[in-house]
Length: 131
Picture 1 (cartoon, rainbow, N blue to C red):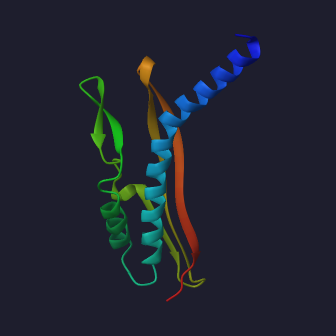
Picture 2: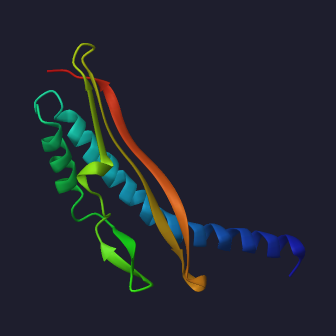
């Protein structure tokens, strides 16, 4: 085996490992973006910001898992752990615009080392509200 083949093998292996770790996080982020878009779609209809937050939380109830520290150990629990305070809802009635966003950080567990790597996401939808 020569050095070029070894380098290519390590690159392919590293890419497969990174994909195995980060693709599930990315797929969950797509679900978060879909829920944020659904919340944005309700801005012209729904007058209560709290109701928009509840709609987004309801759509994200069964999406993914997250890590929490319990008794000094990291435990994987279902859901993404969002609360109503995590969801930003902004409206400008004079301009007829609105914004719904969730700014969050997830932890990817590096399997053989039992270490965690933070990955930041921003799911946002903003624009003109059409009745």
